[in-house]
Image (cartoon, rainbow, N blue to C red; front, top):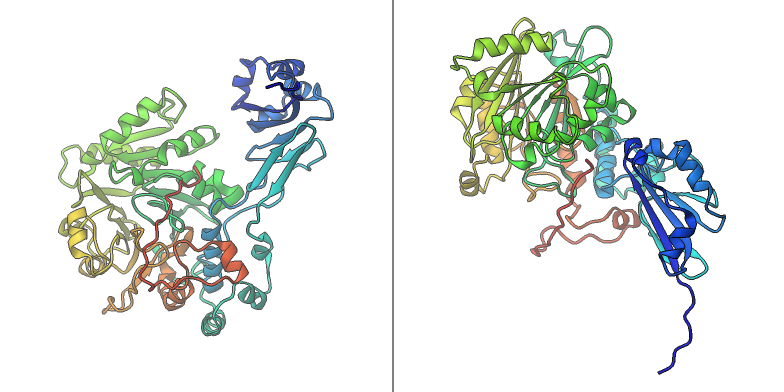
Length: 525
């Protein structure tokens, strides 16, 4: 067989430089050398997956300028590329919830435009782009995606129409709007506790799913005058940093700077895997308040080892560790530990860890401010626990896990979790004034079974969603929205896509009896 000589192929080059320090150690190749090592292939594109400071570096800019006009440069940096939603179905659900309670469900921060303009030689990379290479040219195609204009729609009637809200629910939304339920508005109460805000960053369990990230709850405690807050983080599952950035937008740095306390309930991955990236990002910021980390020794051990690879603030003294065992009510080290904690945080908070009933060692926590007369209790992962009920008596707020449905008592017992009705009973026995349920199983990706039928004493109780914020004094208002929340999400299926919903494609019936396999997706980190 005889073959003619082949033509030169096409090539692309990837430049991946994570920092200016790495750039200093990098030899940038001569443009001619790239074609030589590719058998004379025609270089069509360079993909710059680099830190934002690298793009602005004089040496790097000079190297880019050596390539001719036939080479297209594709740039991907978090600060320059469009900040689109990673989980579009979750964002669309948030938009729907925003129709019910705008104060509790604000639209997550995003940007569909790059921060610097593109040009024929410079393309800011975005999601859903695919590229094909031929010997003489390169073409790019954009896969159809969510129409982001829907998030900027200010006409409520138009938005209801575009989201294809059922007429019955649309009428209910009008009623809610006329009643003006705003769970972030001033409650008019004089109690300090009523002004504390609860933000549920992650409300799922085990691993991130389409609609819920894993466990993470943020408390906003008013500080001084105005709108300043100190922040307390309860657990930090994977993706917690990404959830904070998505929730607070440009204000995420101030949130991390003013983070005074992190409590990690136990060593299961869905409760702490987001901690290293959060601490690493915080360590880069200036003027951070001292941070108290309360956890078991195993958490401190792996953070201490990881800090050898990247700064986490531990060696600088900006983060100080407190052993959960030393904050138990009967610990002989409790008094000394509390004094050290209060001196570090410049507060008079009383912290009591509580051993709870879960597989492996796990703690709940009671956070109390006696001078201002408030108490918040966080359950961690647990079966109904009498010790927690006793420690949390008369709490102003109980945040309790509700992993499974009321019909799954045996499974909950086996796995060391609570059913939804068991969690409500714990709140009632504790005489808690308010209760927020979270840590839902993937069996309930959008909303668990109705809680209204289980709340026979009409306690203030709500189910949580990712990115939900609510003042404690306004939980009773948010509770009134539960029927509308149930109706809003009951038609969504595990495998529904925002594109299908947007285009009005039919949804499979939830009661069809068919089981679907769902992909487990990691969250933004």
